Structures are given as C-alpha cells and as structure tokens.
Length: 146
Image 1 (cartoon, helix red, strand yellow):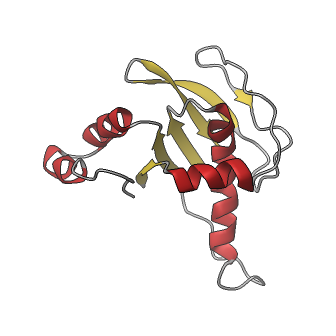
Image 2 (cartoon, rainbow, N blue to C red):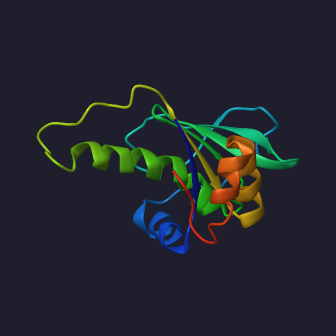
Image 3 (cartoon, helix red, strand yellow):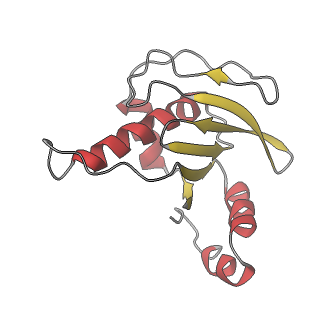
C-alpha cells in the first residue's frame, strides 16, 4: 500500500523533540547504502539510506524492516529521524489496545512519500494517482493523504 504524507509543523516538532540524539547526516554517493541515525532508539535495528532521484533533485530512500520512505526533506534532523519515528509509531499502534499482546505485523513493507514542500507533494500525487483522483487531492491546501 502506498501512502502519501506531508510533514506538518506538529509532526516535525514531534520528530525533533520526541527522539534521542543522532549523529549528523553524511552525504551519500548516488545509490550507496549507509546506516543512519546511530544512537537513536528504534524498533528496527537496521535503517538503510540510498539516494533517490526525486524529480531531478536528490531525495532519500530509507528502508527499515516495515517501511520504505521516500523523501526530499532537507532538514537532516527530521529526515534522519523519520524512519525511526515511523518504526516506533508502528510498534505503538500495534500495542496501543493491549500491551500484553501485539497486533500482527503488516504483511508487506509500507511505502510512504514524505515531501518537504508543496511542489514535491503535488508532483508525487500526480505520479502515483490516476489524473481524475489526483485532481481531487491536489485541492488539499495543507496536510496530506494516506
């Protein structure tokens, strides 16, 4: 299932203040895999990052056990904490109803697009949805869709 998400100020604040410390981001060679977010507690022990050609600009693709995140967010603190945040959120969702028993894991890796600006969000919306559906969602002025 593909989800389109747009980071709002509230989510950005949660990412910045809600996680542990992280090392500064390092530029990756195109297509090179690198571990990120060292020192940040995570439900997933491995986060791989590769560059992603987002509309001619450099974006990032993060892969964890449960998520595939494609983003063009430029703020390295938010960008590098995003995959950890999503893994931790999934663990919370799976345990929120009954802490003694987890809900089942997703059957497949979830793909999310988190765009740092309106132009990127509109481009991904047009690329991922049929034209008649994209027009409806492109009328959303703030936020995103899932």
